[in-house]
Figure 1 (cartoon, rainbow, N blue to C red):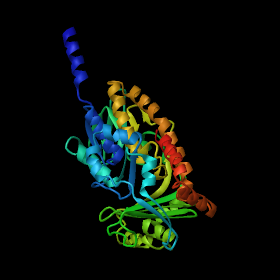
Figure 2 (figure 1 turned 180 degrees about the vertical axis):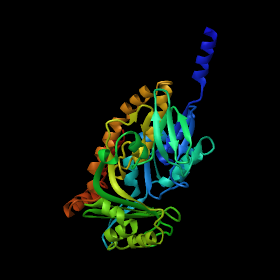
Figure 3 (figure 1 turned 90 degrees about the vertical axis):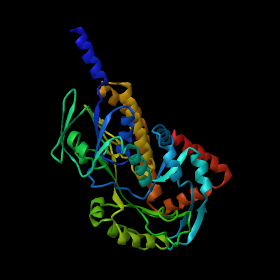
Figure 4 (figure 1 turned 60 degrees about the vertical axis):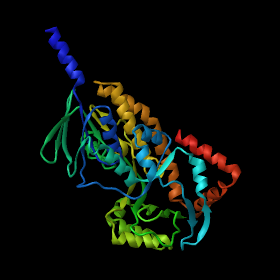
Length: 402
């Protein structure tokens, strides 16, 4: 009898565990990859009917860059690196105010950094997992029940999936958070801003290639980047006293109303948006603030758990870092999911707090409250080009990334 019990115990130790990951964005795909690398059987559930991607830029540096390397993505992402490009600050009519050379940003961030399109990062992650995990599109989670040993997940196609772990990586308006944790109103902190971003099908002719032009005025910022065919994009951020009303308007009407008076590349970008708004990202800016990111065998990851916002400039990097740490935690505590999730959260929460605080402070850079704030920001951008101040800026950025 003892031999039979020992054999059963050994079989239990070697049995493949299943994880369901909800959301096929950066956080979800990174979690799927990392957990697959640890030997888990992975099912990814995505509500969209097919893969979606957006055209705005994300930066990978600091711990995010390290996680990207540990996930084995560097060789695939390096050829897609945009690198550093010249930024031109312009007036409302598009006339140039001053130029910030690419070398300034490079000196501040350092060599261990990648600037890539979000869609490129998602594509590389998807390619890494497409043949090794199961992905179900056009599928949502309807119900979740769990006990000490497993989770039962009812899907929209009527099937019921049993798993040892459920990862909710389904974004700011997370269905998993709603089902298992709290409603949106309990944990969403609205920051009173709107953000829009979209790829440009046609190169913006009024912006030189290899250049990004940026208008910064009271309460709003508009940036248009000409990085060549298939690589150009536009980004908008502005203050809004009623984000819900702006969301109802939709990206074309809302962004045109907020930025239609601007010239140069902005007017061209808005015309392209009007012709094709399907690929645009447009949403209110909110952070998720929760006392805990896990409940039993369910854990939230990425924007579903914390959403540092685009103002932090670190969302994609933090998603990779969080996924990598999650894989390491469950590997270190085999058979003890709850302890793994508690330790994972404890290791990651200080970084999230820091990034959320930096985002709240950084809102004034994207949407300065007054003309005086605009002037102060421009003074700083001009000043960092001075050799004596460049080193101070570089050390400040490095401290933020560590």
